[in-house]
Amino acid sequence: MRELDPRLRGRADPSGRRLPRRARPGRRPRDVALCARARHRRRGRRRSLKGDCMPPPRTRFAPSPTGRVHIGNLRVAIFNWLFARRHGGTFLLRVEDTDRERSTEAACQAVLDALAWTGLEPDEPPLYQSGRQAAHLEAAEALLRSGHAYREDKGGTGRGECVVFRMPGEDIAFEDAVKGRLIKRAADLPDFVLVRSDGHPVFHLANVLDDIAMDVTHVIRGDDHVENTFRHVALYRALGAAPPRFAHLPMIVNAQGKPYAKRDGDAYVGEFRERGYLPEALLNYLALLGWSPGDGREVLTRKELVAAFDLAGVQPSPARFDPVKLDWINGEHMRRLPAEERLAGCVADLRAHGLAEDADPGYLAHVFAIMEDRIKRYIDAAAQTVYFFTEDYPFEEKAVRKRLRRPGALDHLAALRDRFAALPAFDAASLEAALQDLADARGEKAAALIHPTRVAVSGSAAGPGLYVLLETLGRERVLDRLDRVIARERAAAADADGAS
RNA sequence: GCCCCCAUCGUCUAGCGGUUAGGACGCCAGGUUCUCAUCCUGGAAACAGGGGUUCGAUUCCCCUUGGGGGUGCCA
Image (cartoon, rainbow, N blue to C red):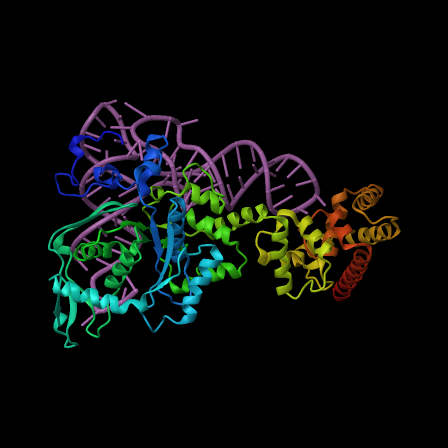
């Protein structure tokens, strides 16, 4: 660590204000697992993790199962997982299912599914909080006995007595791995309920007790828990347990810069899955929301993320979710995928649209090979390749207008059709020669023939190179399609003439 | 209201007192190509404002403004 100005020692300046994290000596990392990377980065030299006798960390993801997993929650899981993996530790899952109304079995399964899909498998069987109520109540009794808690009809509600935790009456501070040293005055820390008058433990008690039971060393969670942490620290002490390290991640906000609300929709993990995103891409994107490896890399594999991850690099301010960048990252992961895997995903989308049910595997492979980088999401696969699999392919209105309803276009197509019909071999090279030859004969540029042909045989203005496209479709289909389109467009033109 | 946190291009970020403030997505313009996608080149685009401290502030301090979180017998 660089030398600190002695005048900066202490946690506050003369006016009593807290210093921001970078100026605070208290931010000096004491926890090697948390901060070795920070030191490394600051001093620009490598330091061994081994010599520091830090036991491997244990992190946990502790969602309350509500049926769907939000990307904000998934990101919390990702950071916990990344941190555990980075330091050779253990990633745990605790299902906080004490709200019996919402915590159905299906809701729990949804959590497991989301984690499995993203590849964040817990290293030990999940702990279900609902099964620990007896232990929670027992601990409350102990706190009562030790004088750290008392019974009271809080607020005189007439609901009966609940168990209230007695705050120690002193300021409480803790070191947050992303926010630095946080302190709260005793006056701002009132006593709080541990056990409701109906006999159920509240979140704070259960949460802390379970973290102790699970031997959690690093609590990495959302920003919304910062205020709770002061209470939790007091609880740990009263319980005679050493508090874990804390790291509070900034929230993810929506396109308007506001916290995600129900109506924002498309923010649930399952929806990204349904929309054809790759789990690796979502993982990559979410890991980069609020954190960066610091060396400019943007597209990282799971392995690279683990190797580079560092809590000290986490941004303390909220990050905005950008679906456009996610699309880009997804495309990047897509193109890095082994061909067979990408093929399988694309074919699944075809099947989902009732296409290519009995298509030849070789043909399928060929189609997606010539599509190259054009498909960025599985869910786009069918729409972008429909014309390879059915004669009932849609025509883009704009493309038809621009390319087919242009003077001379249909004549060109008719002439080209005859050239194609007469070709000895229907391969890309022959097709190109034939088309070029016809263009020359008619004093046109090749493009004048290429565009209408593409629209006629595919209905689309975009796609693979025309010659390889034609070769792939094969002579029969190409000639049929040209005939049909020419006839249809001529009829349409005649109608228009007659009408005017 | 009170408590706490935050603030670099539109977005995600690098930056740790001296930089032409860097990168990525997106955008714009060129190039390659039959289109689209890819690829290549170039461009526009940021330190919220005001005071300090300092020879020198994006960087350290304060205030303002703006955002966020918390203020339950919810989790």
